[in-house]
Amino acid sequence: MKTKTFDGATAWGPVILLVLVVASWASATVVTKHIYLKHLSTPFTMVAVRFTIAGLFALLIYWLSTRRTNSALPLVGGIKPYLWGGIFLSIYMIGLNTALIYISATLGGIIFFGLNPMVVLIGGYFWLGVKSGWRQVIGVLISLSGIAIVISGGDINKLLQSLNSGNLLPGLALMIFATFGWGLYGLWGKRHTSPLPGASLLSTGLNQLIGVIPVWILLILFEPNGLFSLSFEGLLYIAYAGIVPSALGFALFYALLRYLKLEQVATIQLFSPVFTEVLAILFLNEPFGLELVIGTVVLLWGVRVATAPRKKFARIGTT
Image 1 (spheres, helix red, strand yellow):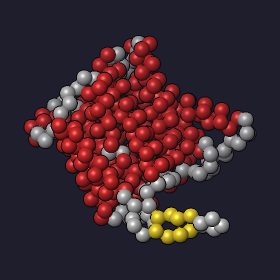
Image 2 (spheres, one colour):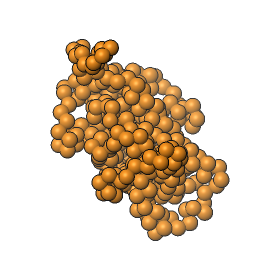
Image 3 (cartoon, helix red, strand yellow):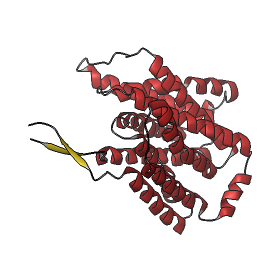
Image 4 (cartoon, rainbow, N blue to C red):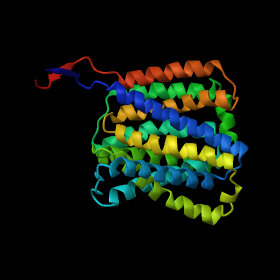
């Protein structure tokens, strides 16, 4: 039988899965806020425990999935690809969580999710030779506008208040640092991800355990009593953030990179601030406003513009 595939068409299955992954990342943000508010966990403690649990869980699932079939994957290319992935992930871990010491989560979201699509698209052009059309660029810009509406509420004073809160320059520098780390991690995964079953779990586990090593060093140096400040309930929340968004979410993200274009990955991640706002309203009792509805509509429009399939199609396949 013959099959039809559209030239440049969007595979909506991977798109929907990536949206769910991004939603899980948003839940991790809300859980982190809850932990900081209610359980007084220190930043390096939170990150070290979360990503250690995530890496070990990913490798456990990988081992269980390959044990019966004796189909363990060789470390193709040695440890080097995982080392670089871990370095990029470590930049993200350290930068994001230490930035929130100096600046608000609102401003951090603008910087991180605003710059990340540009890092991916520009980095993809120079590193992978992937060219994005005007449609993708316009879609990203529209989505950024939606995020700005959600976060600022259409009030420039709210943004200015965020700019005036905390020690701005270190926070800005660290968040930009984190953004480049995450963007490079995604590009590295796009270039080196393997189509073999279990490869994304193996990569995720090794990348996270390598990336968390500098965090443990910083924890020992600057927060030696951080582990003792954790409550059992706080540990359960951290375990959730490690297992669902970080282990399973990162592994699925790594696997989906094979099926999605860079501009799709870049744009869909812009859902995260909106999901965070909705979850914060539901679980942290943060206020709801019309700007959330308007901003979400604008963001979805931008995602549609950037990921819409072309009308041309070509027939491929055989009987």
